[in-house]
Image 1 (cartoon, one colour):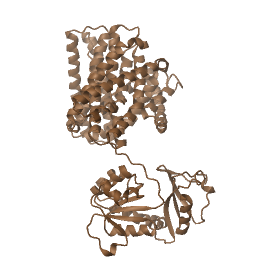
Image 2 (cartoon, rainbow, N blue to C red):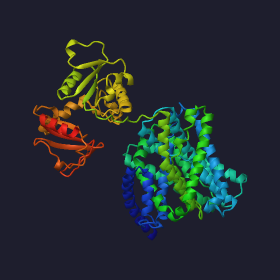
Image 3 (tube, rainbow, N blue to C red):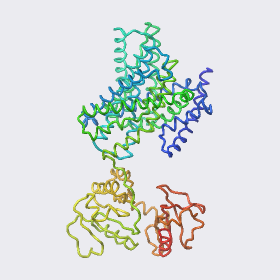
Image 4 (cartoon, rainbow, N blue to C red):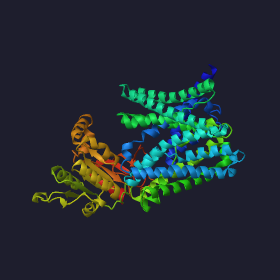
Length: 640
């Protein structure tokens, strides 16, 4: 009873620390540190080697938390492996996976074995244990990070064969490495405990794998039933996590029972069971989308708990002695990745442009690698803790370097679609409107009345005579050259009023090649909202815009009147600060006409809470309201 009470106390204290760890790690990401590194550092600081907020006995008492997390990590790794998405680049993905898996594992294992005399904790080991350490390290070095790869791809908006191959290989390897680890782990245990590699051992290993696969299929069936039941997503999440943990509990129970009953340990690898169950749900049931949503929603919580606890479990005294070894092993892994990628790319028939950078996407490691390292730490007394400390240090280095290398490779291949740099303000406020119709003419004339230079891009062949008070330019196609010809590359704003398909083409070109400051879209189908939103477009949905406007006229008639320009003597505009003399001046010291009111300040895309002591910065966007004459006065002052 006292033990359970102690566990509850440790758990409650750890939850508080984990919440703080999440916030601290988010702050550290502003220094360009990966979130995982921030969580590990917070765990280290809160752990027994620094502030001692987490006692040295806590990680052992809370190991069941690790088992929950490891089950989840296995679920997440397998759920990303969707076979239908691998078909287009199947040959390249297959050969690259074979090259990475075989070469990285073999070369890393051999290198670590022959260099074991230079690794402090391996120097006095006998040959069998050195082999065990080598194959376990080689296996973990194979692990990748699908979550990090997906994050980089989304950030770079990367599309193309290179990106598709990189993601496919990353996901497939993370699936296969767990199976490889199960085999390596069994062999390592046999070597450490002096079990002979006879026919009985091979049969037992084969039997354990078959049982794990069958248990995984059963788990997949159970998970599909859970997902099919009409209950809330929170309840489904809890049940999925409990079934994941039950796999670990059952594995431990069978291991102890088999030893007592037949004098031989039967170890059903829980990681294999979990990945097979997740793979079944993702590929052979209709619940893949819901399953992925649950994993994505739950992931941040699980990772905060797991990485913080892992950081608290690290032996900093050991790390201080072996940091040079960690750097050395980082180099060993990097070399094996390069060799494996060259071999896989050549066998897959890729061109040299792809092959020379094909190793860069696979440097990053995270969840699976850390999870496997913690398994080794708890399973091998004496050297497991030192092993895990060094391996985790290598993983942190990979996490620091890997994403940058992946981004670089995407840029070199030319599959990056990030936003171009916003052009410098040239002193003219100009806009391009795509679409020749009544609304576009009305908008163009209104913008002209407010001092804008406006061009309407028309795909129609005939322009009526009474429409020539606006600059109308024909455009034969929606491509970069045609858009440059009509001046869209230097426009401060682009307004798209065509079909959603054409509007998206315009937005993509403007986003990737021109860096247009403001993209305004008239939406035709609500289903396309997210696509435009990801490009940072300002979206007007006609079906709801009128209702929203009337709502504001009822609740806030004065503000809505200003917005609509119903009061001809007043106006509201956004002004960007370009005057270096204004930089650093506080609002209370800024000389403004008496009828000018500053409503808001935007800095770097974020709203700034304004008060008299708010200091202005170059490129701040200031929203002001006042008479048109006074606004022109302020505009000259801010932009001169």
